[in-house]
Image (cartoon, rainbow, N blue to C red; front, side, top):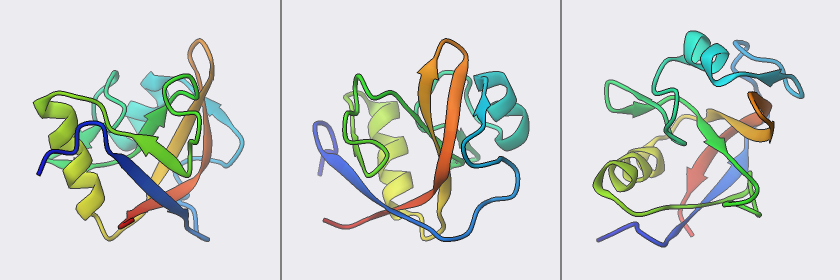
Length: 111
């Protein structure tokens, strides 16, 4: 099954990771330094595990509750890995150049 063009739906989780603060903005470098993963991917991974989601409202107007899955093998593989996670991950929304606001920890759920 291909995830291309599909949606990932999220549920907010009551607890927070403690590594980042709700409402605070971080650069992608700061996110990388705290959580690891790619500086560019919207679903950065470490060892095949998604460590956070970094999305824009231009591409994902329903974010953070709905995130669109793009095309390509790396994107689809990351989306499948994220959908399979039982644990929540921090979600960041881009607010400005080099400013990604941490909104909460979320977990993907079936729809």
